[in-house]
Image (cartoon, rainbow, N blue to C red; front, side, top):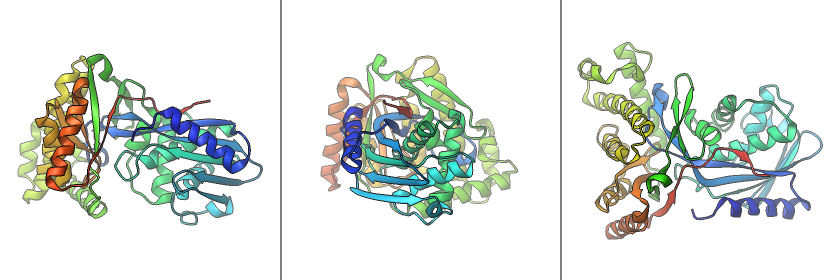
Amino acid sequence: MTHATGDVAERAAAGFTSQYGDRAAGRWAAPGRVNLIGEHTDYNDGFVLPFALPLRTVVAADRQDGDRWTVWSELSDETISFGADDIAEPGRVTGWGAYVAGVVWALREAGHPVPGARLAIASDVPLGSGLSSSAALESAVLAALLDLGGLELPAERQPRLAQRAENVYVGAPTGIMDQSAVIRCRSGHALFLDCRDESVEHIPFDLDAAGLAVLVIDSRAPHRHADGEYAARRRSCEAAAKTLGVPALRDVAVDQLDTALARLDDEETRRRVRHVVTEDQRVLDTVALLRAGRVRDIGPLLTASHVSMRDDFEITVPEIDTAVEASLEAGALGARMTGGGFGGCVLALVEADRVDAVAAAVTAAYAERGFTAPGTVPVLPAPGATRLD
């Protein structure tokens, strides 16, 4: 989790030359992302507030004749090739190549004449840690193919197409947040996304000017029961909305929460609903503070979000809770799990000069409990997908 963009861009270019014998026509980058606040609100038509990471996936690419796409990946050091017939329907290209094939498929499905291409992929976005490595890959490939083909697709429509590649072609049921953040974020800002109408607002989040940083802590916890538990949480929320007679839990106002909870039959469902409704409100409160330039004051909201995920939504694991507790004890202004849960990452809002001390405290707490050592990296909000050259 330590490479700079330049390093990964150079690796992509070198990989292209090594595999194909000449220079790429260009390089395109897309970032990983973390969600500052707003967890499990997306499929409830609610609000989220992600920002892009300096960690990036870079695609070096050039056109090639015919309806054929050849792709080399640094991670596996393997090259795959597929043609139009191979991507005619989901499931024919599998593994990591499905994310690339899915983008080609989704573009063609939308009526775009996608050019044949040779691609080389390098990435610093860690896999399996909840930082949206898949959305970064899809979005970098999408940016490359759009430019190589001179294709017109407005930025506001790109996330939905990339999401379709992942949902329909790959078969992963992600919401719209990941691709929206990866494609549309701006440097020094968080992306306030309304998941109902997909409207966005760029909210100033200038950590550097405030003397702060966000420390991203990879818990290295294996994702336990994530798929089944995620689906169970979603079913519970949808059933509760139906019982309450609202389109989605986003439509339950926080000042009406107690009345709504009284109409639900079991305690577990009440906990799930309480998390979603209060989490939506925490996103709105965080946005209001950031608009006012009160970056430090969002810390307690981050911590309250974590407590809600731990106690009401029940999606944390011991490694995650340990990272949050150790961060706060070491002076973090706020800390929370980020992502779907049952593993993944924690983010801590810290004074810039306390980054190393907080990281050391988390590492020590892990060692004390016999956990695998965590990964830590301080980050500032970075730009979304872009062409590098």
